[in-house]
Length: 206
Image (cartoon, rainbow, N blue to C red; front, side):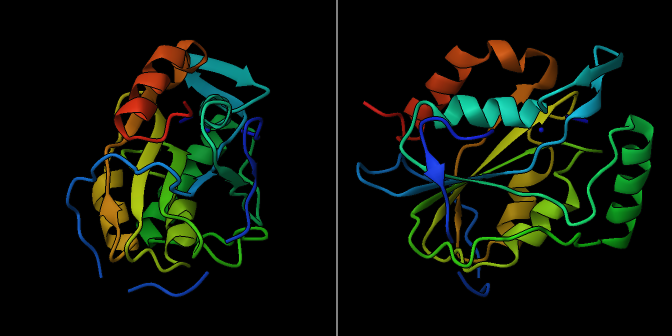
């Protein structure tokens, strides 16, 4: 399992229900499009090269910060009302329970609306082949019709996992664009990979 504060972006405010989805590839974003980076990250004991390491800053937070320094966007950190344990095994067990129950963990202070955004970057670790269930809690709150959603993940073995399929279901009416997957152990050296992806999806600040 693996998970920025904002440095080039400002904190977000965001709206609404949720209706029908298109999973077609997105074209590059147009200049002037408004971008929201919403991410969930977990610090504490994490997987690292087959062992464990203690992270003061979660991997997805590192990745989100790297992105936010390079683009114009608003940033919202997704946090659980019931925080996830710093203990790796406890979090693994909780995640299995939540996946089996198709749970929707409650989140702290969600944005009121995402109506003003054209592009939404949804960032998270990959736990057991998919994003933590809290990402479904977030995505299902809003109306994504006409927006482009890009999955952004940190992972140990599963890349983007099932995020493209899951967000197509959770974000009806959105176009699911090219995702970014960075191995958790390598996230702090991922600048070139991040910039290349941001350029391809058309949001890199000129």
